[in-house]
Length: 246
Image 1 (tube, rainbow, N blue to C red):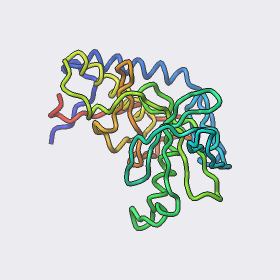
Image 2: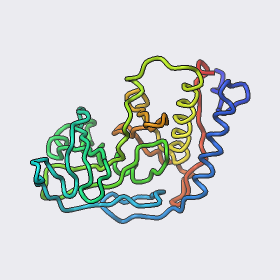
Image 3: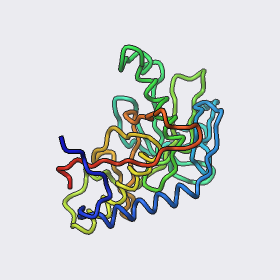
């Protein structure tokens, strides 16, 4: 059985793009200072600004009758999935838009994904992983609102104004190479932190207004622990590309 080749490789048509992505990620990793967190979702974090953890929830309406979650005012629905729904909210204090993901804790706690885990455990894992991430090509998590007296958990995420790649028509090779480079840079970042995305597809790749790709992290993401991992360091990336893609 022939071993799978590692990337980047000089024989790859995208070798220069991949090498550039590796260098970019290496520079960003060197610039981040890792700190520990003892909050709701404790774990190593690489964020320059830690995720805000809010334990009090106030549901109201503003003067125009729009729903409010704490200081966030709802503008419109974005999407709905099996785990919850996402809507566009705007911070009433500074006008910043956010995508807020809402999940029902009681419902997901009753849904079994394995014999020992509920769907809600997947959500908490997703939050724990997002707390570790800070990268320009990955959708960022800013705040988690989890009031123990409330039945819903809210994830305040970066709002990406563009559409998923799945909604776009055909594009030229230069643009496709740019998308590919952003995607690979994001995956290298994840793999360097021993995180597997688990659900890369066009619907989870969002395009910003200036044409950059941002990866959406979902409940399929997993943090892989190895015997060689220490509490302070993430392993160097070992990104494997299937021979059919070379």
